[in-house]
Length: 498
Image 1: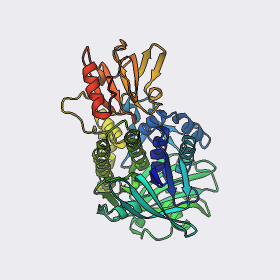
Image 2 (image 1 turned 90 degrees about the vertical axis):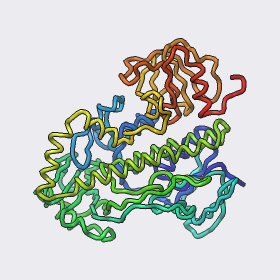
Image 3 (image 1 turned 90 degrees about the horizontal axis):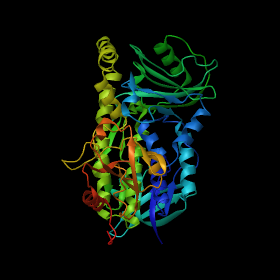
Image 4 (image 1 turned 180 degrees about the horizontal axis):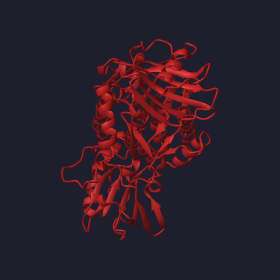
């Protein structure tokens, strides 16, 4: 039996890809090696991902769950290269903040969403072999009990992490560099409550950031000037963490055990291709890097939203298979930009000489507050500094996420997030004249007038918005019907009666 899609990996990337497919009616199965949950690891959800979660009605659930852990999990600023503040207000989003939430809770919520959508999750299965032909992909899996079996699917999505078996089996090479330093992440239950809350500091002894994780647990991310060359495989000890914290903070913290601890490095690799034939790589299976500013998971989730609707559109017969080539064309440049940003941040953040410390203080006090600099870094951290490939004469909003509009229509006020809940293309007539009432197909058609549109929307009279919230086309004329039809035809297979 040939399955429609198999996703290897039930981390955030795999759960989102599978959910997008299932919500569109495509049968999908996740095979996952792990039988237990993940450690907390990533702990930040950025504004762009909150916007995406909102398009599926999930953002408030995530915020409510975060408030069960700490009273105020919303932060209006962030850091770049350990320096702050980067202001989220520059993004013109209703989500002008980031959400602090441990990754294990993020996966728990995304798992429930996937199961509710109809995704089948099979745990204790590891992908061993992958072979594809023109009609499908055959994978060999082994269970935790050692039983082997073969599965066949129309498409395979590798979301199986930095040591991706899918990537290796398909033969996709990667390039980059090995570790040049080692840092520590440790979740510590202190004998006395940590008074510092969320705290970032650096000096000649190293760099440290603290994050309260609830239940008396504080996470410390740190790079110690002397211990930054420790072997990545060396176990992290209570004594080492205690010494590093004491050196950097200038005070001794009392604790006798680590709830969880690990080393991280700046090893950087990126796949030469994000897809080959019927196999796709999403998230960490396509790239690994130092977790600069804690944004990596957010890029993985955006990869997943990008691919999910495209696979669904092709399998449902709404789009041509050529659409799938846009996944690599759109997401690989974003990943390359992320790696450039990470390299720049690492070079600045983990230099502890007197000259380097002087530069950082100057940058933080003089350049970072400049609105243009701050806005650029806010966009960069969200993966939004550059548009997706677009026509040279396209309106400025094309290739970027749709502005966070409120639309006054016949049925009242609607938000972009709510209008995208169906997971379909959205054709917006912003004149309120209902000019596209005759348009039919796999899309939503809405007419209304935007409330307080941002300056970059000046002159825009219509928008075609993709299921992942990106603007595919913007109309600027009194009669956009022919141009709207042409734009739709580039993305969808139109019905004959149009």
